[in-house]
Image (tube, rainbow, N blue to C red; front, top):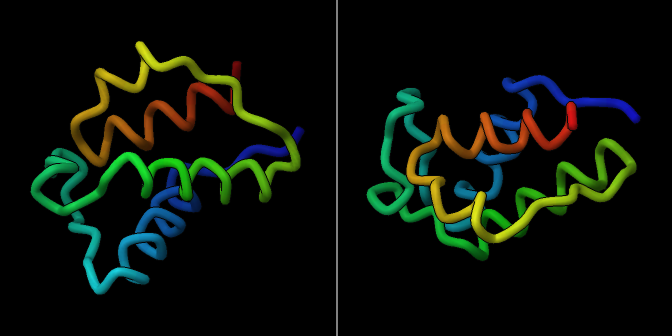
Length: 83
């Protein structure tokens, strides 16, 4: 399985937001609610990551509930790729 760097995932996250006319802030501590990144956006990002790495990510709902910032999304997807 190949893995994506944090920067690559961040770029994909910016593309998901850009498609809606939104911008990804440079600050990883930015709140997802503030920037308008919703659960549907997370799903799209996760699918893009899966397509890139050629493998399905295995995550559970409880882990998703703790995600509140841009950095949380990047950390979460990074951990899933190395699990």
